[in-house]
Amino acid sequence: MSGPVRATDVWRDPTHPEAGPPPGPPPELAVTPSRTADVGGMPVRRALPQRGRRTVGAWCFADHMGPHDVGPDASVDIGPHPHCGLHTVTWLTEGRLLHRDSLGSEQPIRPGQLNLMTAGRGVSHSEESLDWSGRLQGIQLWVAQPEATRHGPAAFEHHDTLPQVELDGATATVLVGAFGGVRSPARADTELVGVDLVLRGPTTHALDPSFEHALVVIEGAVQVGGPDPVGPGHLVYLAPGHDELPLAPMGPTRLLVLGGVPFESPILMWWNFVARTREEVDEATREWNAGSDRFGDPDSPLPRIPAPATPW
Ligand code: MN
Image (cartoon, rainbow, N blue to C red; front, side, top):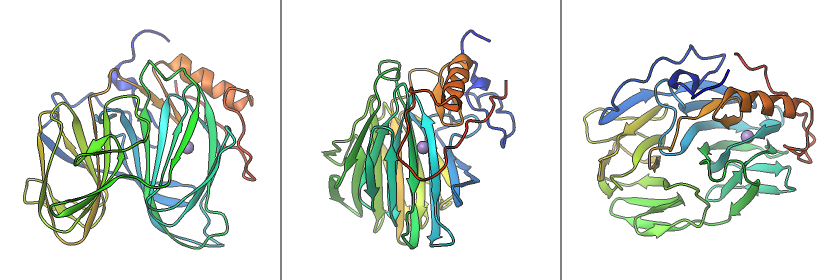
């Protein structure tokens, strides 16, 4: 099939009911539940995508991983799998993981560090807990690449440290973009922000009103301009037009702020591929399952994960 991507084509998942129509004009502020899933033996809360909410800026996927006790009998092994048309952004608050990719990268990641992999036309990678034991928690994010870069080369960057700023009532670590007067060196192909906020008390932060924003609470609970506290397992969405973010934590609270200029086009997301048309997804599926050079091969002891059949 060809032609423009319809809104109902944008998110399909065999574990999820058929995506409904878009919800109409975005509400000023909406709190919606994440859904639970299992990734590599680890429970995750998937805050994005949701029915009627496929992207926030270019952010198109947000899995809150854990907390999960990793050990000899409970390793986290995500075998080699492909991506195209997106950046993966990995941020841990506890534990460690080893990233291997088809570019030859072999990069451990710990809390406070950022792994950012650009898929472009194609890349493959694995995530492994190795023989490490302990508690793992973090967030796995994807960012949709714009037309200008999505057919380009793959790349990988690791940031050992990121800019941090002490604000009134909060410590902000800037993963991507700018916040609180500091800017992350991490790659961003569209106007984007991603910030880890550790809250000590009530605080208000300036937002770029041209951005839409989302909050994902990692620990604790927070009031966001309303009486009902929001904890882990939800997505808080703020439409463009907000120029400040009032936060009142109920105790020690940690959350991620994600935002950006509304994405340039609808996306078609299936399995690990971000595309625009079904033909593109069919081609990526065929090429990965045929072992094509397009996605390469990470040097991982884990077995490759085959792409599922497309549902159309
Ligand atoms: Mn991946």
